Every structure is written in structure tokens, then in C-alpha cells.
Image 1 (cartoon, rainbow, N blue to C red):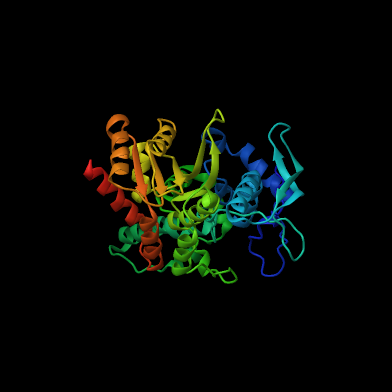
Image 2 (cartoon, rainbow, N blue to C red; image 1 turned 90 degrees about the vertical axis):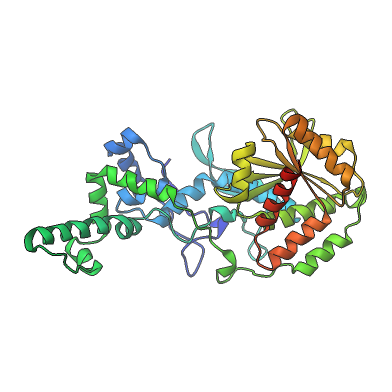
Length: 398
């Protein structure tokens, strides 16, 4: 159960040469296992983050925490990869073997056959990972604990001792503190075993801090080529309104919104069926925002998921307004978007009726809105500011 080999399919790690890493084998797995069983504080209060293990176990570092998380999340990565391939028309191959996937019915690790893209150079399977969960280094780390928390406590102790003995505040460098108190992994592990409350306070502080998502465009070796603003606008212009280009329109809008709303709206899913299978939502995004416009939408309208209906039409009717309104409820939330090629005053009146009668907010957007957000994005202006203004204008117009 505690074996976590390198997840080579993601090709993420710390190696400078090959993608093959060590992973967490039996010996390191036993260290974690023993810590979980023998640590009375963990048995009493539980564990909130896997990364806590690198604060409590000498042989466990953030690379191993990454291996643990990647193995546990592998089933999710498989589904995410398949959805992204469908969204971006990436070819996949059938019945690819993926090793070490957890079987929740048998409670064991096993290999499975699934459909995935493969590396054209060597035929090995590829798993895509959402940018939202990619980090260069662990947020919870023994060095970070020392630098942000414990050495400050030690410095205060030294200052107080000096005041008590000589009556004045001394000059004490961090280098002196590190040397006197023997800064190393073992020191931190021993301190946190003796003072578990200190670990919990540190974890509380880390949870309050905003998490910085890695900017992949700044990472050497990543493909930075992107469609230019004018190329995207031209692509939209070339999509003709009507049923013939409906799929092309859906694919384009899904790709654009994924870029514009990242990292607050993540994991786009297209053609999502309702629980009874009778209705289909064109696109849903998971609302992962913890601040800003989308966080406000989550708090005010209960929208952990954002449903979006796409109509490749310039003349919509009551049917389209009713369709998106039917997707909004207490479980889904009462905020949605209806994106069309164009709309008029009558269409605006239709969505206002849904607000007055059912307290449902439906933001109408057309080509002009999409193009303006694309231009703003190209100019370095946050697209969420446009959404915030669009929402405010709608609500104030009511």
C-alpha cells in the first residue's frame, strides 16, 4: 500500500537527464507507515497534508511527496487527459497499459488498460496534469518551517537571554542561529515531534497563504508558441453561424475560455450529461477561485461549477434562455453563461425575467465580448476584470 513508484507518464520531476526517478520504495514507505502508526499526535489529530510527512520523517523529501500525490491522483489524471484530448483534438491510442493504478474495490495497486495519447518519439503513454496543481517546490517543507517560523522563535529566545543578562538587545545573525542550534532536517524533525502544536500552527499559516501557481511560460524547455490575438479573432470570424459549424464553435470557445479564465476556472468538460441523462450542458468549469470575481460568484450564487451554454446563432429565442435557466439550481448554483454569436434587447429581457422570477443570473455574451476579452488578454489585462464589469452592469441594470 505504501509503494509509490515514479509516475513517468507525466514527465515531471527533478531529473536533469532521463525521466526515470526512484519513487518511494518499500524502505521509504515503511518509514512513512511507522510514523503514521507511532506518532500519537497524528493518531489523535490526523494528517491534513501529505507534505507533513517531510516535516516528521528524515528520509522523506518533497520529491517523494510528489510521487505519492501523483500515484494517488493517477486515475484523475487519466480522465483529465482524455477530456483535454477531446477538447483539443489530440489523437489517442486504444488499450494502453498504465501501471500502478489504485483499485478502490480490491484496495490494491494494479495495472489497467485505457485510452491515452502517446509520445511519438518512443510510444510511451502521456498523462497531462492541470496547471493548477503544478508546483516547483513543496509549499510545506522543513527548510521553509525553519526560515519562516522556528529560527525566529530561537532568535527571540537569544535576545531575551541577552536582555536578562546584560540589559541590552544584541546583534544576532541568522548564520549564528543556524550554527548554534544545528540547523538540519533531523533538528526540525525532533523539534516537531516534541512540539506538535508548533507543527499545527505552521500548517494553519501555510493554509492561509495564497498558493503561487507556476508560470509554465517561464520554464525552460516548454513550448511557448501560442495563437496570436489576431489569429484567434480570425479563427472566430471564419466560423459560420449555424448548425454546420456548431462543433467547431464549441471547440473554439472552450479553448479560448480555458485560457482566459485560468487558473480560477479549471478542468473544462464538454457535453456534460445531467444525472438522468436527458439533458446535456455544453461546457462546465470547476470554480477553483479563492479570491476575485469568480470567488464572489461562488459565495453569492453557490456556483462551485460554472455551466455554459453555447449557441452558434445570431437570432436566439425563449428556448435558449429556458435551456440555460434549467441547468441552474441549488446544487449547481444560480450563475450561468449563455454565449451566442449576437443578441438584441429582447434577448436581454429574457435573461432578466429569469433573474426576477427565479433569482438566476445568466450572463449573455456574444462575439464582441469574446473578441474584447481576447484583446485584453493579449494586452496583459486580466480577463476577469471584464467579467466583473459585465456582471456589475447586468446586476445594476436590473
